[in-house]
Amino acid sequence: MGRRKLSLRQKSLWGFLLGLLLAVSLAGCGRSGDKGLVVARVDRLDITMADFQTFYRPPPQEQNTVEEQIRILDEKLEDLIGFKVVQEGGRDDGLHESDNFKNLRERYIKNLLNRMVKQREIVGAITITDAEIDSLLSRSLIERHFQHILTLNRPAAQEVEERLKAGEEWERVAIIYSRDNDVGLHRGDLGWLAWGEGPFSVYTELQPIAYQIPVETWQGPIQVGREFHFIKVLEERTRERGMPEEERAAARSFIFSFKQDAMEQELSNRIWAEGGFHFDEDQFRWLYDQLMDSFGRDPSNNPLPELSREDRRRVVVRSKTNPYTSQDLLERIELLSPSERDNPLTLDDWRHMFLEWVIIDGVAEYATSKGYRKEPAVLASRKRFTDSRLYALKLNSLRAEARPAIDEEIEEYYEQNPQLFDLPERRRIVEVLVETREEAEELLLRAKEGESMDSLARDYTIRPGFVQRGGRFVPIRRDEFGPLGEAVFEVPEDGFGPVVETPLGFSIFKVIQILEPHLIQLEDVRENLRENFRLEKERTIVEQFKEDARARARIWKNEELIRNWAEGIVAWREAARNDSQGELLPEK
Image (cartoon, rainbow, N blue to C red):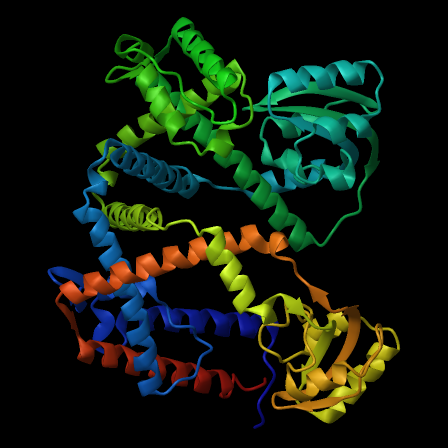
């Protein structure tokens, strides 16, 4: 019986099976299956199979011999050893003992515990009935044409409200004030939306409000968290029904998100009530004034206020077990990147942010009482955070040693490498590379008849890495790409070239721009060269540190384990390839 083509469902099934096979192979290729086995040792530091498998996952599409796979594993293990020696350098420097490091790690664990509680006790407990889906679908028969403005603080919201009440055009106000990422495209016009669609569906509070506003009127500011929304309803109509399965799936997704938000809020309220929390508005307002005064003195650096020891001990929130002081709030603000502190936040914004942090602490305490903090997944995640953070801190300290390039170095480099700056004529092209001349000639005819070369490249090109780029090259010179480069320079701008045979296949192309010869002046690239010099010096310092550390260390590799894993990877790929080409179920 001949082979049948795979249906979409069969392809999905095979994709799942191959993914499952990959997971099994990673867990048990040969004797590498025991993730506790030591694959390498640097002094007394063990690198286990679990470390290696986290660092490197073999791509399923590669086809290598055992010896080639061993070479790849050796290279990846060398990279991992380099990571480990830098990480241990940070440990030797005691970078993990600072209060800032410990605060970051604890904040990371608390966020992890929050996600764990929500996943286990909220997401796992959500049920959705057919009756709920039917009820939502009945409401989604109506759709509305909305306009929307989003601001992130109360002063901006007040200005928007004043302008809209004064009769200013919605589109103009949206362009000036709205912080919606796509406002430049739609100018505050969201188009037609049904219940459960568009940005309103993200907010459990906003969705019902949007569908209660009378047609041809607007409402706002509507505060949701730290955001302020203005919504206008232009029109309303009965919507066309979509595919039943797709509509039910979309409805289920919306109901799930709605219930998840509600249950998370219920959890926060319960934690707040059971924890006996009390918020001191006066103390918080005093701290906010200190913050705003400090930011106002030097907004470019967003400095934190310098408070006395007594002021840092002022209690802003108190629970049954913990007081949260001005110091606690300042420490959390220090964890924010400067970009997150650029936007001037109102008193309500800071209050909301601080109470969010307090609730996260409360949920983390609850998770600790349930024993979640001691679970292997949390302990492993804590170790990964420590390792990666130590590596980053040590790497930054090494990079800081790089001396800035002086002008004499930059000028010497410019003079000694004229080929980089005295540019000859170059041409931009879009190309499609295929396996046969016949296919190339057919595609060239289609392109000349008006089909987009970019689309043809995305559908047909076999040149590695050029599908996503739509076949577009960087500007090329006459002496590049052999016969293709020669042919390109015989074609005028906007012209198509002939079919060109290359070592990789048969190429067709279109010249989209001719760049005339050009001399790049030193002053135009001086700062770029200075940055390149700095990056190269940083790389040299880091590599030298790795080399010196490796020279001092005693390094041992488990060659047998590496070979076993390589053999397992090759066998897995071979089995997957054979299975995917074999017979499917016989036709009925």
